[in-house]
Length: 427
Image 1 (cartoon, rainbow, N blue to C red):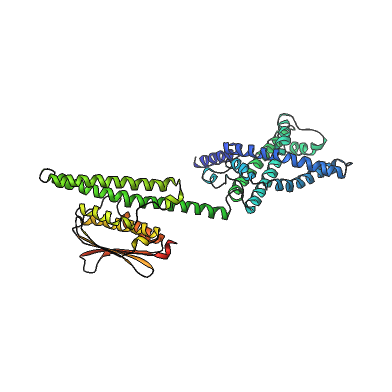
Image 2 (cartoon, rainbow, N blue to C red):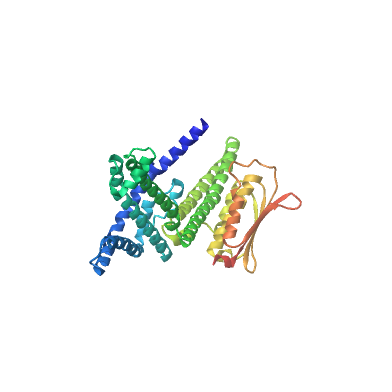
């Protein structure tokens, strides 16, 4: 029974390979290739016939094969047109398995390497298509006649006698040969279609240069997404954290200290307005309606005093030591430095609570240095999905070829964040 099941499965696989949906699609694709071959073949036939107008039947057959050989270079030349790859690629996707169809390019050939590969594919398509079309148009009717008509005639008398000597009836060779011819046509079509399907990703797929360009485009998109994620995390995340703490403080003293609660609510309103403004700036990066404006969007170190006042209203007192001349820094360095300080202070607020913090922003000969310290308080539970802040700081410093470090000091009582940004990196 196992042997029978295995044989049945093999028969079904063979039947699917010869007559299945994909085999039928490949046959249609090959017939279209045969149709594309006809203009080149007819032109070649006319040219070769003009060279030797008087020829016999044998020469006629040789002429047809010579015309086929001459038509292939003609097809290759016309396939150098860039749009040929688009048209052939769209048709070839039906040949490939679903997991490999995406490897076939849908765009035109933009380089000579891609055009040469498209020309090679086109030649194979019309050649295999011409073979399958010829066998289908000429062989199928002949096979049907053999199947339904007893075979006879002097040309096959030897075959008939061979079968009769072995006890088979004289009419049997016709159906057998007819079915064999049909099977040969199906097998040729399936084989040619399978070969084209295997070569389609190679010849119609992207060239190494196109793969590199696509990888660069994906990297640019990913970098832009990471940038937007950092901006949203540092700007809106900071504002929401401050709003949450101010709202909690106001709720605790709403009845006992209305003046403090009113001040906290005013601070919430100011923080919300600032967050909306920064959100508009970040969305401007997403829209990129004006790239120059998008690049210059976002606060700089000139707005550091407002940030420190906002933190003071949440209970975080910052002892700031700011070097003179920060307003003259390159815009890119100033923007990234502001976000680094903002994220560091947000982490103080989120993890240490209303604790004092020390901030130093200094200028060395060729770089900007940032140091932020705060006492380590009781460990607070991390929120789900957290931990992106320090990674974002690392990405910001890496963009300008700087560096950063964060962690507890040797005595284990203080958390320190340091970052440095080369001033030349902004250029």
